Image 1 (cartoon, one colour):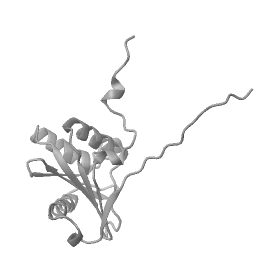
Image 2: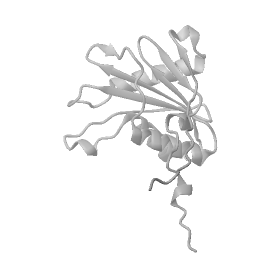
Image 3: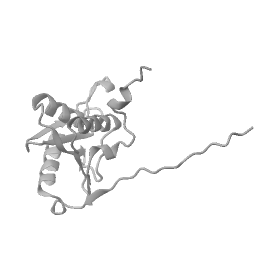
Image 4: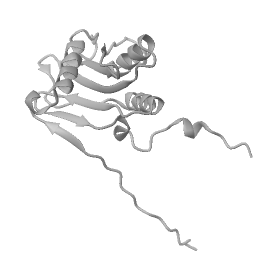
Length: 170
């Protein structure tokens, strides 16, 4: 006998701004994106050739960067986003991120399309946003376009959080 199950379909969506040149961006966002591009140059990516740089603007205005570092034991590497966030958290505790820019380089230069953070980086960004209680703007830059996302949490809907760790003790 088939049970009558009631379900509801829900949608998750978000909006972002797309720019096609630095002139269409806020000056601070462009400055942060340039810092991410500069960080990508120093990435250590001998296996993939995919160099990623990230730059974080802290609430004080200070910019801290990081790049991806690959390792022959692939899980041992670190992404540029997590590298930059770890750098910021370790060296500037209490000065929380307000924005993060990401840029990637290949053998032919800046990637044509923006590169979005991986799932691990999205989770770390979401946690950092939750920890600070403030939105972190995300600026993703490519040759053809730049995407500006209002908050990191938009990149990871239905994210795992500290609330999920609370176990009922009834």
